Amino acid sequence: MGSIDSTGLDPEKRNAGFSTPGDDVHLAGAYLNSILEHSGDIIFMMNEEGILLSFSRGGERLLGYSGKEVVGQPVQQMAHEVEAFENALQECRERGRVMVPEFSFRHRLGTPELCELCLIKIPNREKDDVVLGIGRGLHCEKKLQDDLTRVDRLAELGRSASGIAHDINNPVAVIGEISGWMEVLISDAGGLSAEERNELAKAVQDIEKQTRRCKAITRQVLNFARESHSEKQTFDLHKVLKNTVQFLRSETASKNIDISLDLMDSPPSLQSDPEKLEQVFINLLSNAIQSIDEKKEDSGKIRLSTSRIDHMVEIMISDSGTGIPEEMHHKIFELFYTTKPSGKGTGLGLPICRNIIEKLGGEISFQSEPGMGTDFFVRLPIS
Image 1 (cartoon, rainbow, N blue to C red):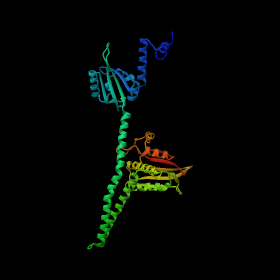
Image 2 (cartoon, one colour):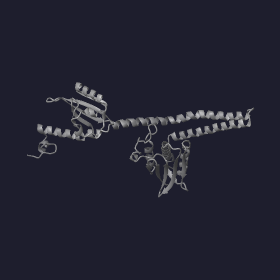
Image 3 (spheres, helix red, strand yellow):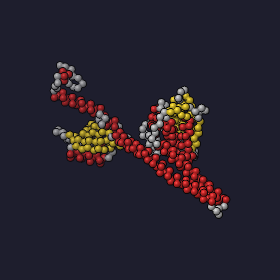
Image 4 (tube, rainbow, N blue to C red):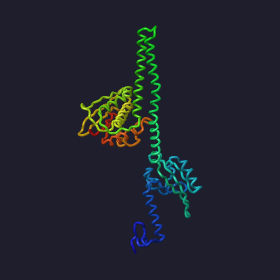
């Protein structure tokens, strides 16, 4: 008699194209066990009262329970909303099958795990009917949908930025014209003492100064939001860094944050993309400002330095902010991951920064200690 292989069939019979009924049952059972072993879905069998009879490895991985601890227990204990599960089970008893597009199981840690749930009643002649349940995890799918929604909102905000800047510029221009006219009136007005004339003149000068500032800010916003068609070119890195600091000067001044520059004596000449690098530096400096602001201290410091390491120039941006917890270090370059409070971070900045730097032939890294601040290092090849 021939040997039996892993499928449970005599190889000669299997190769001859036929098998006995007993062999077929054995083979079907082997395939079913393989599915339960390797499927990533939650697959379980229960009686009509909801007592678990079997639980797949996929269910163990998704929900954190072992089969041994849940088999023989009510499946309702793994439902995040028990009443919703009981309603689905009752409908399955009546109709034979029910599909729930979104159902929350409860993970062993207590958190909800969103799934697409299908319940199927399987008749059993010898005993009571059993119910097969299949739950397909929707966490990744839902996260992708949420991320795409956020990207679309951010894209719409970017498209609106230039229009908003133009809308602000128009009234600011009118204010500037009026302030000029007021200056003429003050100089020609009679009945004013020298002190009153000086105070009014100073007030008008302040209006003109703030008007020019508004124009400069909106111009910077327009330049930053404008679609970029820049290419690699030779430029002075230090000039780009100083322009970036100036762009954020009003924000650092309002938060009492001092930015110090410690730049090499001779500015390095780079063959790169200055606009994209400016975006990187603005993002890193903005993160540093927010980190210092979250620390809730009276003042803060940011140090920006450049140094040469072999054929690379290293730009370091160091802040005295809150720092990054060690358990988050491996995640901060992940898309949409942010350590900032809700509404203050998109999780796009650092992944975009890394993508830009790597495409320009450079490297980006960081070191951080909670409560002590963070240092970011950007290395770029020198021309």
